[in-house]
Image (tube, rainbow, N blue to C red):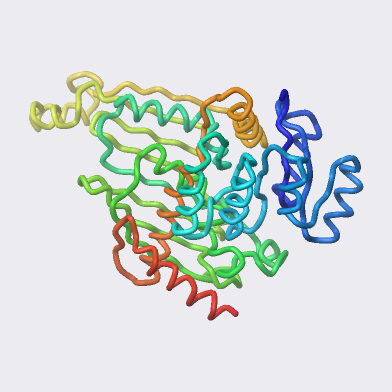
Length: 380
């Protein structure tokens, strides 16, 4: 097998983008095996744009057709684990779109089932993990270049969405259709990157606002305090109503600091001596001289790196990596089992907000599902 025959389930915005990438020859080791969507207008679209590709309205029928070696799930979030399990049952390699699911309990189900199929490739579309900028940051942290993390701060409010975005479909930004708002739709990439680079917190306290600036029942503004359990803390802020939003990540360690602006520019400041050593050896006279500009030499070295980003390139990289794992055993950038961490963290943020108290991870999954279902029923 030289190319993986991919079944695209859902020919909406994301599925349509993936189909386009493959059709244009931008994904070297994948071809479209089949397309599935249960909306009649999507059948017409597929007939016009992909006339030679088999089309199915029932994804199970597609899985059993023999037309595909693998699938990608470009469907509402609740369906990702369900479809993934059905694919794995039929020995079909599976790539889940983010997030892996809406609640941790259902994601754990597919993770556990995937262990019974170790010969199959199970991955998730965390395309930001292919971003050289964030790979570089993770390398710096893992190598201990800025020492033990003391504080993380991420303001990611560049997700501006007008009301018309939410009005496109009745399932959008609802508890029953999408399972949440900005935490499950726009920000899962940053939530994943935060835990991938800095580790999972032990506790969270969240203030979330629901339908604050948009006519939706779910969260559109979130501020979370993270407690890493060792004294280190963090703040995560996101929303969908800042038309002039901010994307700024700061990671402070005892030997330096990393600042990321707009996911394009990284400033790394490495202390010449760890902060504790400076505190133990410097007098206030040394400090005064330092602040006056003529003190005992520079205290840090600075490195500035800038990265370009081509739209679609990161998604293509995940698709190619997924296929390369199937074809050649290339290690996965984002194993499917990693999807649980971001879902657990988003669930904890929701639950903390609903209960108005600090929540410890791992959360009480049954309590979360009970509270989520209350909101689904109220919505109906």
